[in-house]
Image (cartoon, rainbow, N blue to C red):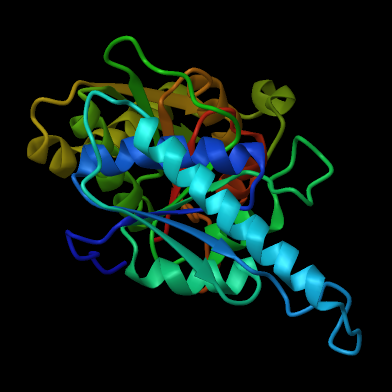
Length: 296
């Protein structure tokens, strides 16, 4: 992924839902950490919600436009009053034409990162991520952060959790996680999982394999993956975790109370052109803390 210009803004997409306003609070803090501007955007949506052949009264569009601008004003007020110990030098609000998904993907081309709530006003379930968050995770041109609920304020140095698979695919996510931990003065927990075969552990006793040696080898993989980034961030405390089993389960458990969970878009099993791997897709729907997905 190309390095975004240092002055690129943190962008947050809103729709008036509770999780989108929670995303504004998180994005405001993030923009302060990075010393960059905050851009708050909201999409108008399709020309009509029922298809091009349906004519709606002018009042429908007038009410829609008023609601979008009111949401942007409320979001800007939230951003200005979030973490008042410091201030954002520049907050802008913009109305995007067209449906949210393509509009936000286009905006992501010039963003440092894009932040959204996990589900919007049209989402019935409180568990699964919405279509906008899912589309951005797969197609955005910058890191995507998905906020499920209002993140809690940390009273001291927090924890950033990152998934490391030992391949080139996870390096952008690892670099982003080190950057975030360094900015916050947080401890970084690097989690590497492994499974020699896609077999249930019930079969372990029937397999004559040197599991202890495999464990040691996987610890070496993690150490080698961390080496370069750790050298660039010597003040960041790193805890290494090597686990045999499911990547999504291990990361979800260790990030339950984390400030941020960082993963790549696909792991060692990913193939060229894959948009979203199984681990990142699972965490998109189930991670309880803010989730950052970084494309390879």
